Image (cartoon, rainbow, N blue to C red; front, top):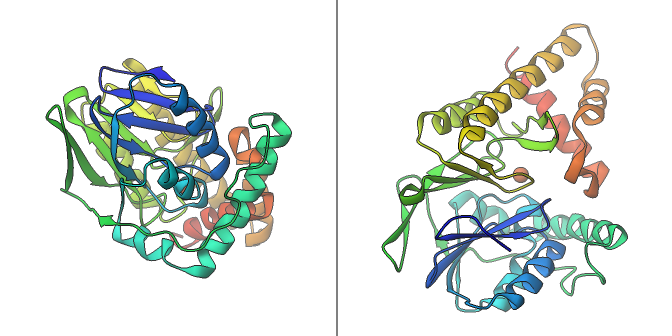
Length: 293
Ligand SMILES: [Fe+2]
């Protein structure tokens, strides 16, 4: 556990981050996978002064951000699961969740092989997940200590993407809406829903005073790093778009381009994910660029 600011604690293994906001009443932001939630649970157990978790916040519905919820609900049975209405719909679908938990199990096995966990997570399979409270743009979550978490819609990565802004400490919890840093100087552009809205979300982040950019995966950016990272992630998206556009215009078919995109961006923490699922996801980038040509 790392105390990021007076109000915010960071948990996780670095590939997936969990944030606890609040010292008395608190919100847990990000839910991760079952394997990630097991890691969080161990860290939580070791924490001396535990705040009272009122909310478990789902920032978007991709499998690596929701499959940890059953374990988190066991830890915090009274907490409300909060997410967007689109996330609520997706998480209520039997078929979508069966597939999500299949990918989740793959991550559990990868983490086990990598030595991040010592046994497979207890919850390896599960059906639909209930989102108890729906939030959207302009809403906020209130916690003790006069803490106010502002909800922003942050489309582009997915239609259900939310971000949370803690104005009192100028922290943006961006989930995957601001790209995925896979290594030094490398950012995967993840405009899986739509390129233009992805850029618009990034521009919005650039227009706000942000002292800490709290991502779901990898590094947390602080101070001057925030501006620099946001510029780099916009550039990475523009370069990714141009790379795909050039390949399509050269007459390559969607699958060939998809393969190139996969080879270029399937790195870092993503390499613990099922390659077939990530290939289909990367192909969304190709289809999204194609729709703009
Ligand atoms: Fe995502």
